[in-house]
Image 1 (cartoon, helix red, strand yellow):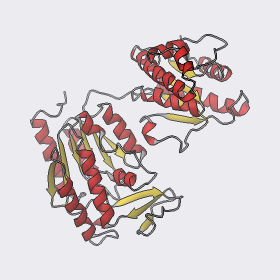
Image 2 (cartoon, rainbow, N blue to C red; image 1 turned 135 degrees about the vertical axis):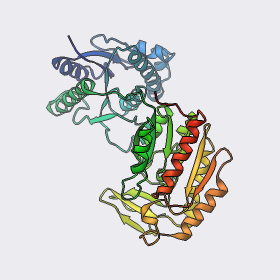
Image 3 (cartoon, rainbow, N blue to C red; image 1 turned 135 degrees about the horizontal axis):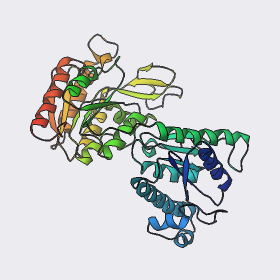
Image 4 (cartoon, rainbow, N blue to C red; image 1 turned 90 degrees about the vertical axis):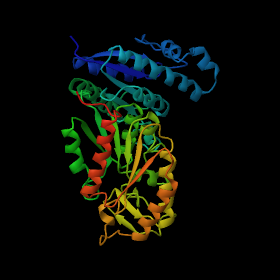
Length: 412
């Protein structure tokens, strides 16, 4: 008997051969398939398990209405809504274990909606002609999505695209067999950070929180990590958030491509999740290292961290802008929120005597943060550096207070 079932989604009127090939590879490996057609104008040569009419109906429309729009973008958005809703419902009913979606730019746009509708731990693979492309904004990418470049397959099967398609089919089936879905038996604490060379609080905090019976996930705040963090926070996956590496906020407002999107530092607050926030590495903006430094930032001191990433050090004016951006986002919070300001510095490289130490810049940021802090946020200052034990101790005091007040779920 087939051990795992894979949902295959695509436009079966134009990509029947490619989609059938994917299904054949999965079945040859012992898997099962369920198919969904998201075509609009044409009809597949063979019926699918879920027709284009089923997809449009799930979105509250008909195929006739999609065609009548006389706009392929509008029509495909109808199909994207329907496909996402239908996939989510079928998955909740246990009808498939992983999803494989095929498309060019139009199909990839739809595929991203379908993938976003599926929970963390559900293997979700997109075979796309624009995989890894800057056309795809980070906010569209679910936390555990996988993409494979559909090379040489825009029109018809050939040996080049068969290599990509067969890998994708094997990958999603293998993932569906091997995946260990998140264990919800322990409440999950989400923390943001960078590596231990610049931020170290997770070293004492992780075991301390685990000793209290919680699970801790630390997200690398380099654009995609922050996006995954926000994505899961929006789903309510976290019992508490410790967002101590908020540099992506500054990256975004200063135009860096290393961005988690404009919604960074908002999802936990909008969801009402208790959050402790500290501005780790607020003084830096990370840039794509292999691209020229933008004209607006080229006069600032910079450091090539590696061939992928270059950091620039912000001046006082830009630091104040970062402070205001933090405040604007935290003002949207609906749950308990503490802004913890370590007055001794917010990154190992800005300690007195270190290369990036700037006492005046830190003072300007702290002054602006105090002035801008919204009324719904509790502001606490710690006379310490963010990497000092006093900072971690302050975090745990807040956490323990919230637990005593019943604001956090208690581990079983």
